[in-house]
Image 1 (cartoon, rainbow, N blue to C red):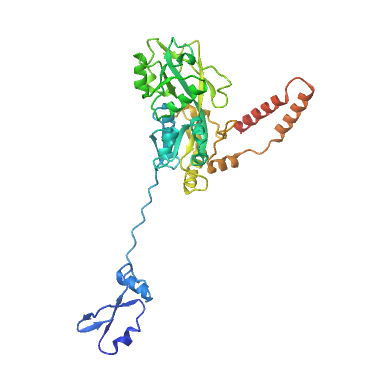
Image 2: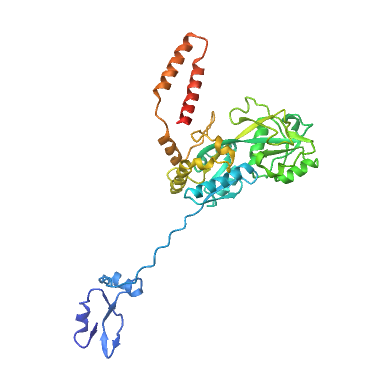
Amino acid sequence: MLLAGGDLAAQAQKIPYGMVPYGRPVYKNGKRILWHGVWRGSALGRYARQSGAPAAAKPLLALAPEPAQPAVAKDVTVLADPGDARASRMARDFATVMGASGAPGRAIVGSTSPNGLGKVLKTDMADFAIVSLDSLLSSAKGDPEWIKRVPFVARLAPETLAVIAPREVKSINDLQGKTVSFGDLDGATSTSGRMLFSRLGVTANQTNQPLPEALDRLAAGKVDAVVVLGAEEAAPLGDFGSDGRFHIVPVPWSPTLEPVYAPAHVTAADWPNLVSAADPVETVGEPMALIALDAAPGSPRAEALGRVARLFFDNYDGFLGDDHDSHWRDVNLAAEASWPTESWPRLGAAQSWLDAKRPSADGSLETFRASAKSAAASASWPSAADSDRLYDGLTRWRGLMQ
């Protein structure tokens, strides 16, 4: 606005809507200009807001805004221990299926021992991990709050934990005081192997090398045994033992192992160079799980990872194809991660999904259990405990068939 003459002070009190007074004399074509429009974000615009001057009116015409670019979703990352070949394969499967389900993902390798996961929790390098549970449960005893930050999503099928040694080694007890390679010092195999030896009461001289190097040292007689986790998938084992000098050391099932492990056996189909075709070898299955990282209950991260967990459950059939690891077909999604004295909390969203899918009580099964218990009271077979076990089996079978 241009003004000439008159009472400038009085005019300054009548600031037109959307205008701001100049802080210094400004002239144009010989006439003094008192006001100018407000530019949002400028120093003068800030002056107008601070001084209470009216905001500038919206222009009648404006350039069309730039079209919004779609936000690129952060990849869902799943961690697996490099020393556990089966877990690494399952991590790749997870990334593939989740990507096809709308949650782009990628598998990464890193230590999943308690110490390794502690380091991961200080960063944002991974969202989920495939881990062995016994070492984490043992580690969590000293820090009950830590366990809440890594709730499990699903209990996975156990992985074979095996010991390879010369055929002269007939039992684990023969390795007392001998040199055993347990894999990378901070790896899952090392942690799980040392715990197994401890539970069996065997003290060995521990060394730590990656599996290929450990097998070379075993062949050269520099170590007396090598511990392997998830070994069926381990590429270095393909040709090892073709000279017939080595075998899988039996680990017979015993009450000492029952609270943690599952009974397992390896066959010549798994390792033709290390197991006789006529005699499968007893060993143990290491408890495994898919866990969410840094997802304490009620946290924003728990909510975000919970959405991915629901996708995982909704699209689980995608894991069952022949192009994915066979262990996916052995998973009971509803299985708990619990032992006689410890239990592992499940991610809230995963538990909610399972609760929503839980079948209602079946009247025919309840009638069966009542009849079986009644019969047990007057006959030697079945016992009431047998009836309960049969009832539970029928319930699981009925759920699988629905």
